[in-house]
Amino acid sequence: IEPPLTESVLMPPLAPPVSGGFAPSPEVIDAGAEGAVAVAPASLPPPSVIATADATAAPADPEVPPELAVPSPSPSASASPAYVRSRLPPKGDAPEEASREQAVTSILCIPPGVWKRPRKSYTNVTPWVQKLFFVHTYFVYVYVFYMFVLAFYKGYALEYPEYRRWTEMIMIMFIPAVQHLRFYFGHWGCELGLVYDVAVFIFLCSVVMSLLMYFLFFQAYIMPLDCTFLVAAVALVSIEGLCGCVNALQTLKLGTTTGVQAALLSGSMALLLSCFGAFMVHSLYLHEALVPTGVVVPGATAAAALRAGF
Image (cartoon, rainbow, N blue to C red; front, side):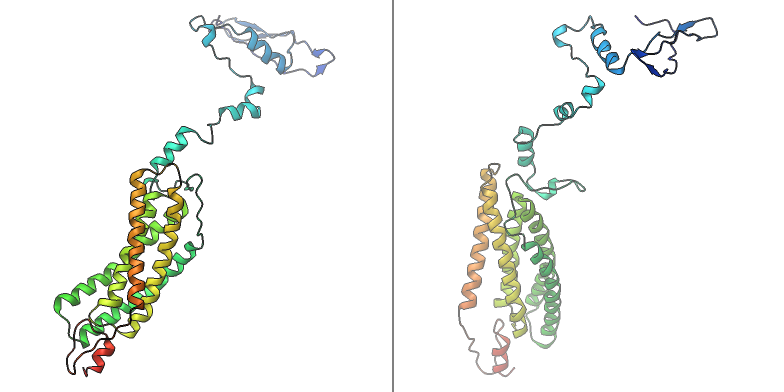
């Protein structure tokens, strides 16, 4: 029963403990201007006794059935490690954890600023590829700059079909954009084991290898300097793509990979292996362009053009 609003109970300061409990304080304190009087208790038991008395003497709510009533924990029980552990969310093979791993399949699904962790049972078996990405980034800047310089020189000194000159310039400008996307998805795909990121990374490796192999084998005029840095560029992309294939095979072993995701990973790996095989075949195939004197054929090497007397 709640007391009237005009009454209030004021707790007096605790007296020093004596043998057998606390010292009595039979003081009468004036608590209001209208004559409301509150009497302090004669003795104050220890806190543990108060908590036990409150838990046992608290009246049950008549509207709540006894079997549905939830007892409130005491201050000592709520601070115990067992009670704190019981309030924590479950860990391990919870259904929520499995559904979260199935939902997060790309780095684009994770909001910025959220802590990123690998998928369960996944480990990046090629951690050194992250350092290779860092070094390869600067090498891309270098050889793309040289490709622009050589393209302007060839367009000034050599005869080009107009459409082919602009096509090759656009392809050169397309290389840095694809490389940046490849590095981004490659870093997070290999680090976290995300299915779509690994698939996109392997597919972009195939695209970059195709672009570089065009300039290595099929562009209008191929100079010795082109062969020097383009062979190294294709080799680096091949190594990084094979590292992505190894991590993709590990991703396929996870139980959360669906059939569509497995088909996407398998198709991207098959495309990369076909590009790598084409590069090896063209590199090992010995050929020499025989050009008649005084005739320059687009697609022939620069050495053949010089031998032709251009």
